[in-house]
Amino acid sequence: MIVLKSPREIEMMQKAGELLASVHKEIAKMIKPGITTWEIEKFVDAYLEKHGATAEQKGYKGYEYATCASINDEICHGFPRKEPLKEGDIVTIDMVVNLNGALADSAWSYAVGKVSDETAKLLEVTKEALYKGIEQAQVGNRIGDIGHAIQTYVEGEGFSVVRDFIGHGIGASIHEKPDVPHYGLPGKGARIKEGMVFTIEPMVNIGEFYMKMDDNGWTARTVDGTYSAQYEHTIAITKDGPIILTEQK
Ligand code: MF3
Ligand code: CO
Image (cartoon, rainbow, N blue to C red; front, side):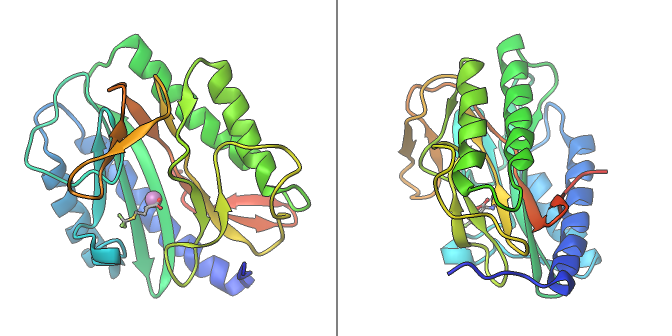
């Protein structure tokens, strides 16, 4: 069942989204060679507390951290750790903010110092893919239109779209209906309605889309070892088009 949200609920989720966007803007300033994702985790925890919010991922299905920090070939759900980031790395920081019971979810990939041209292109294409998906999130379109736009663009740029993790409805809990794959066929899937709130969060690999799971049961990485990037926004559907609740202004 897809739970539609009232304008009041969307407004509250937007407040959570604004706070989340401000966290990402702070993280962007912190990222440089030598910093650890553990320091970022601690920063996020303190920042959310200072702003009267909590980290919804902590304790979710046994996950222990406020953030997911996925480095290089890690696709998603990397654990924050005390290993310094190096020049040329990329890192995706993903988190869900709970502000007064309203949730917002956003992931962002960051370049550490100077990255290779291919890696820079991966970041650029993945971010653009997110916005191409958002463009399709219009009342009357179908969920498949979103994935189709993302897949067509990403594959046209010579990269691949991860299949094992998808966008999702969000509301009272992190994962609700609808499922939002980042691949698929136009005109297929649920019809997009006013009041839906969901994430679009393409994970894009330089090489093939296959993933393998680490022994920790959480961290997914590319089978071929190529780098993987991800950008995620939470969006609300209105009759005038999608509102990006986690936009970094
Ligand atoms: N933020 C993630 C998403 O985009 C959810 C992370 S799952 C968790 O769907 F267990 F790490 F919290
Ligand atoms: Co997320």
